[in-house]
Image (tube, rainbow, N blue to C red; front, side, top):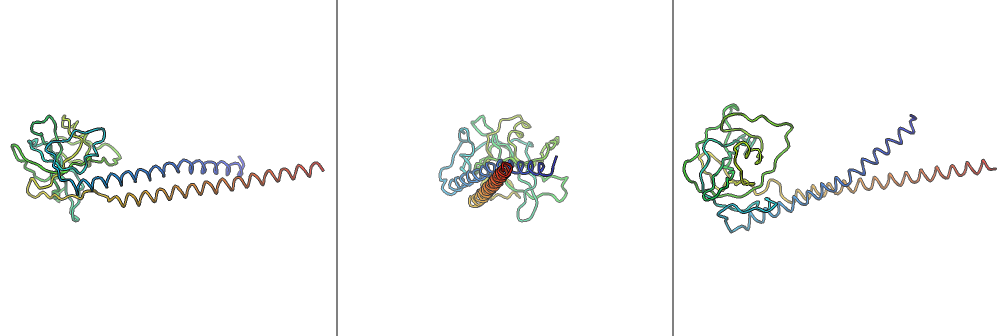
Amino acid sequence: MSKEHSWGWCKRLVFGLLVALVPVMFGLGMWQLQRAEHKQQILERWDTSSQTLYELPVLSSDSAENDGRSVALQGQLLPERFFFLDNRVRQGQAGYEVLVVLDVKASPQYALLNLGWLAANPDRTQLPKVELPDGYVDVAGRLLTPVSGFTLSKVPRPSGWPQRIQQIDLADISAVLELELYPQVVRMDAPLLTDIQVGWAAVNMPPERHIGYAFQWFMMSCALVVCLIVFGWRRERIAIQLIAGSANLTGQGDK
């Protein structure tokens, strides 16, 4: 294969990749705008929500429509079977968020509660000691739909309780507990246990930052479109020059 032929295939490959990347980048920009709108809705609910729900709301197809809503529930905590959400840092100190299951009173539903942050033991092999209250408890907090992060592989789940987890996967937790959990987590407004710290930011990233990321994706998409136009224009010019050159050679041959 000649160098000219190889270079031609490289150009076609690059051109094809650029064409494929344009809709991908545009789609990422639109996704960031959707995230910005969702975060803005959460902030509005967080600031203006004056009505507290005294039962878990019935969800439609989208559980995120209730993110930020205030709920007050009564029920019993499942003893022993709770989780430590790992790698939670506050003020530079490593710790866990304590996740427990509430058997909601007068309801067949179970809700996962995030009690708050607890400092980790310097010895990573030792989990903190947590004593859950017996009997019925009153809890109040905000609903939040957990977002599962990216993991390279499935981490083997240890035996025994409590368990350390890396992210909140409600489907996985439901399977382990053999219970059907409500598809949102309740973040507590006030500490239920001593040494637990609450206090949550309404959103982990403000809408303005999502809009900024969307602008970057759109600008990169536009830059690729410009590259494609320039690439196509240069290719057309080369093609015209080749046709003109062939015509000249044909004319000289006829003479």
